[in-house]
Length: 409
Image 1 (cartoon, rainbow, N blue to C red):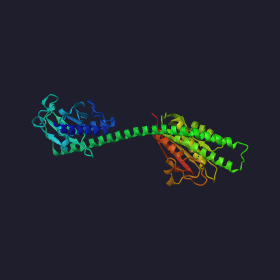
Image 2 (cartoon, rainbow, N blue to C red):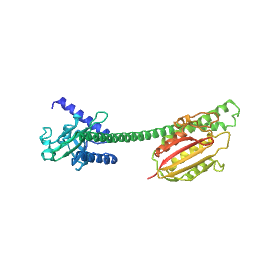
Image 3 (cartoon, rainbow, N blue to C red):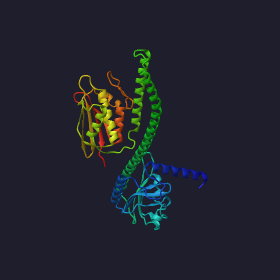
Image 4 (cartoon, one colour):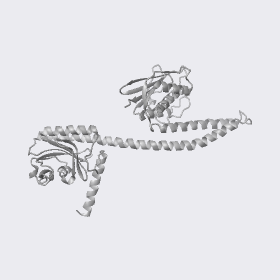
């Protein structure tokens, strides 16, 4: 092999192994590549069907890497690994054409192959179909074989090709699963970095801001400052702006920490709600009615979710009626769904997706203060638990928040 041919071969083999890794397979090892359990079971059944349709005792799904042939699905034989040089399929699979040989010992492509000569096996009948993906990549083959000579009808060859396409669908499923796993890992790493960054920024900004607010309070308490003087009004504005900024920093920090190291356990919806009601100072107002269920959730984050939702209900209450909030839920083997229904101003259907985005506020007349992170934080808490959050209209007016929590294991 010339130096240029050697470089091309290395480049092609490296690209093949990289492509196989995209399918969640590690071609660098000299052991059987194992897809996920669901794919393995389906491959096993497809190979069995292929052997029965073709009347052959043995069948395999081969994945061919730069150095090895890996049998990831098999019927009639135990899955194994051999070198690519010894593989029969490796000699023909890149042609992208089916190969059907009645007697491999008389075919010049296979006559000296160790699977034919008796060194590894005594293959006579051999048929294989390349596994070609939509992008044109051929990771391997579906093949059936026997130690006796045999012919296949056109119908049998056609069915073998159909089954090969089904194998490709399973490999694509493995591919998409691997992509989702990588994306999820990258997202978790990104969220961890975001939480760390938000924590550092929040800490660095809170210290000087708290100092400023402390001096503002000292000056406001100075008896020499006239209450209606311009200086007093300026100080009042500085204090109000500073406190809003401090609240925003706390909200950003809380939002960035959602999902980090959650520890789900069975908790009482009633107990957590009662804690929140006491903290908000509304325990004696008859505002909140709670129905108890057990929810499999992180107690601290469930508490944050309920606190945000009750705070929103108080901020966006209707001027036409006394505020009432009903918290209820249903549970079954799928998990639990929590409903927080208020009788406030409500949210128009066209705005419901928008308000779940970070830092989005509707800014309606009469609305209370807020950072636009409350509902976004609640949505992130639901997703961190594997659930979801949606908004609906409360009968008679108001907003109902629907939060799902999957069942615990």
